[in-house]
Figure 1 (cartoon, one colour):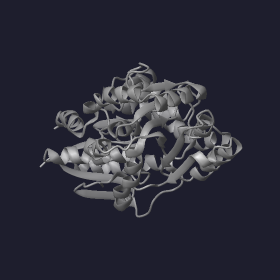
Figure 2 (cartoon, helix red, strand yellow):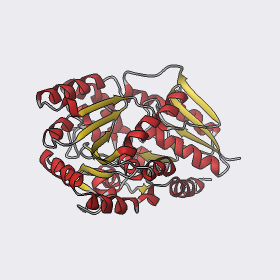
Figure 3 (cartoon, rainbow, N blue to C red):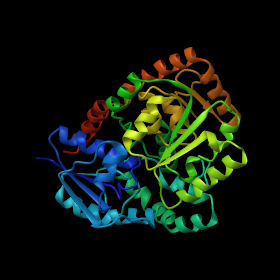
Figure 4 (cartoon, rainbow, N blue to C red):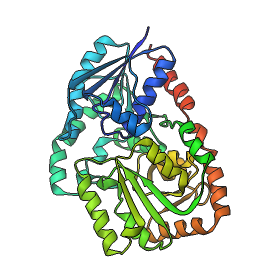
Length: 380
């Protein structure tokens, strides 16, 4: 039996990388592969179950630390290189699913977005590492290491990525080609919500981690220009989240919109699903989002997306076209205008919803499984 090793520094943030690992394991096991999962910290399988409605079912798990790593997160990515050496001895194929360059070769690397770009002050949007001098200093050694090892590493691995946008940046930074393999969504989980929608015309929902780069601070500004709308923010928290939430609440109080903004942290999957099934408009505020799987989940649940006019949501999901599958904004007043129009025009909302849902087969688990496994099998 073929053994495939999947490497990721942590799944305990319950973000897109964790979701992708769950899908990768399911895809490989469906084709009869034995899957070994290598991480730095022990996986909290119950937390994943709560966050995603399912957990990871690898055949074996290998971790270096029996507790969650809550500090020095990016540096824990270097430790996975030690796991990669072990994996190469025990597996037929090794897959780096967090995407940064390693000291040890992996056969396949899924790059969510080049970390070198995120750690610098670039034209592709600011991350938390470029928003303060202390964060910049914290990330500088890691940035230097990545610049040193990335050219050689990416020259010897098969690169996969999550969007046309990320593929363009990979080509720009490394001169390397990449195959686009869209992250999958369990469409059946969300289609059930779409089928029983009780349509609340004034409900606008955002699902995102409470971190600076998600730009959730824009929501009070948008709410101030949409006096008839109610906003729900759902997301996982981390060490930086208390400051982000305080900024949102402070700005909402100043603009007198706090009564129309509800914040839900670390919501179980079923809570998120119940809110999405009542939501007409999905708001995605992050500029230069690498892909935006939460946008696809919202579309599957029957929402109409209003996204920032950049990155994967604009290029890959809306197809760089306004008013076809949703709307994209650059400024706060544009976002509020689109939301108001969708609230007051149910026929337009319905047409955009139908158009957007025609895109969903590209993001199904079956499509991902066939594409991903076909690539892996070339290494056997």
